[in-house]
Image (cartoon, rainbow, N blue to C red):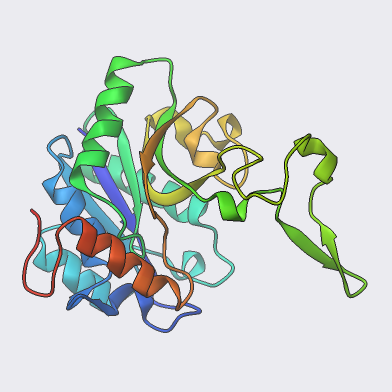
Length: 242
């Protein structure tokens, strides 16, 4: 059994973002569609406290997990919602779980193919804990990161760490971010002592699944960015690539 678990809650700093239309479809529909089209995913579970997300999930014949109120606040951690969902899957399914695919309801930069790519890699490489999507964002490198202290702009990390890097944004080498689109992991990763913050659920030995422009939506400016991604892979207001 290879379940996909999608989490999304009702409240958000961006109002109703998980059900907001994007190319005429609610945002949460995109990870559901990708998971259902992945060849190796056997079941799709959606954990939410949101009636609208629940309706979308049930219309797509997903399996519903009720997300408790204490896991649906602004302070609640995704890792706790994922762990709760995983425990509920084990109770409902009562089958041996080979891998788990973790997705966010606000993460639409995803294709069925990249899910299957992660699963196939882990099958072929049993020493790896997980496979996760990464995107290259050199302009957001640690060299360029700053913090504000005493009303002064200060380096977040000592620039000397980067040796001969210059103002050229590529000079420090490529900078990759876990873009929160897809996480494929072995069940043992839910022992979070194996991982490190902020993604304790991915373990230690992690394989990169490369894509361009991946992100989960947390700010208004990301909606057009994700729309660009979706159009590039074949979505329009009237057509889908799968």
